Length: 109
Image (cartoon, rainbow, N blue to C red; front, side):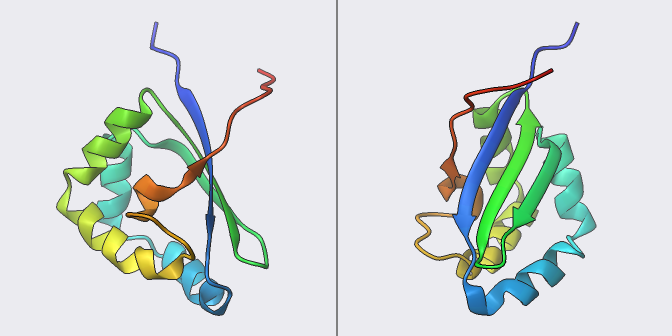
């Protein structure tokens, strides 16, 4: 039996003037970035974007801490985060570390 996954939902705010570029970047995520995410435990990962720039992210992972530290140790993530950081408003740190995690209050299996 595998360990249960944590469900992680988070918010970030994309700069309204950069929405189209943000979407185009995510339509062509680098293959090595996709591989690194999968290898370090980011599963069932989705991003949802509202027209005002509100970004809602969701993923499942055996361990949020391990998933974040695993990505922090990859060269591709350093490059991706450096390129993505300027897209966000009021970001402290990198997007993959500085997001606002939401509390799960209900889940239907």
